[in-house]
Image 1 (cartoon, one colour):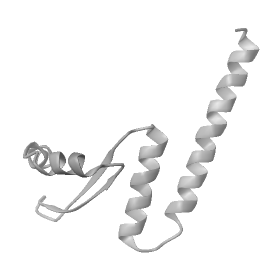
Image 2 (tube, one colour):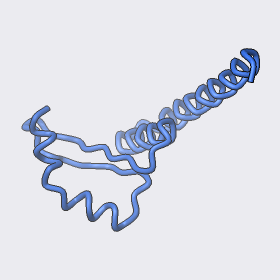
Image 3 (tube, rainbow, N blue to C red):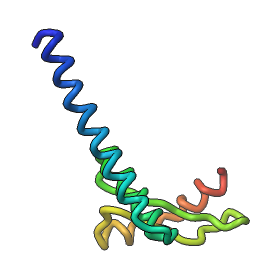
Length: 94
């Protein structure tokens, strides 16, 4: 592959990323409801990073888990995530 073909391929990838970012921006701006916006952010982040799963945990003022959202999780995955006590330990250090 010569340099021109490499640049052309890179251009295609960058255009795809730009298109995904644009779609994410539109989806996030569709609602003013916090849960809906956060779910849109999470779904978009998962899509843009090509991740299989995504989790967003919301903490209260004392650092305790208040709520959480997920994207791409199946019921067994969600159960395993909820059973991991290390999650609280990780967030306590933030």
